[in-house]
Length: 272
Image 1 (cartoon, rainbow, N blue to C red):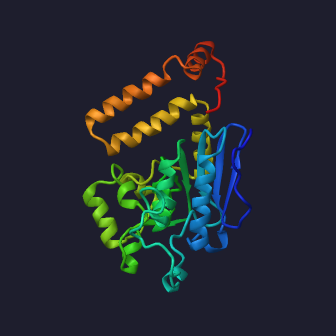
Image 2: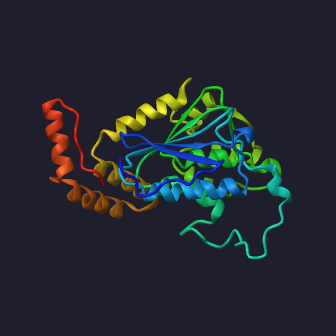
Image 3: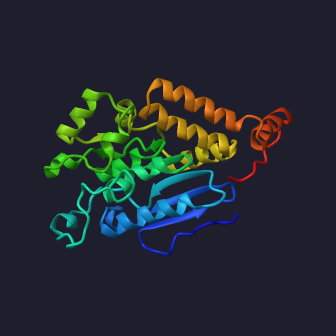
């Protein structure tokens, strides 16, 4: 499958695009439990940029190698002196986000669904990154926490925007104020896990493959509408729904979806 962009070789993040259009994105700083140091921030953002330009992309599976999905901020960041020309947190260097926020919210900005496969440890910034995915498959024994208050900080990697609609307000307050740890099993009840599974990567990949077999134009439109549902008023949502459907109806991929279903055969969609 042709690529419009590829990920440069590095020791933080890898991307492998399968023939079905599912990209496996892996955090590969396994010796540090995929903790977030400055280079990890840069490589994750670079991966998002590569995916935005990738031809034939249908879905993304986001996972971490080794013992953890992501242990959160590398503690060496606390002693790091910012460069004189480094943007402040208040500066919007990535559209509506700063650098740290972009690491998590960019998964919502991608045009295709993102499924996070979470295992081991998922703390602080790692939980923010997982929260940016459309769907989260979590191992039942995963250790999770909104960790920032432990260090006297507030969540600042887009969590407050990403957790809208996922976690009940009073429950979210308790998780933030106490930074208590919870399991993957509890995460499902809290709203932070879509499914709990002993093999999260396999389950996430199966879901991504199922999505990749749907009309790619309709899938992308559905993701845009999901964002509108959270961020816009009722009148605007109703209009956007009609605009998206009007553009899809009777298009080649929509006709192919109908014909494949009626013929009980796999569809052959045109790439986006």
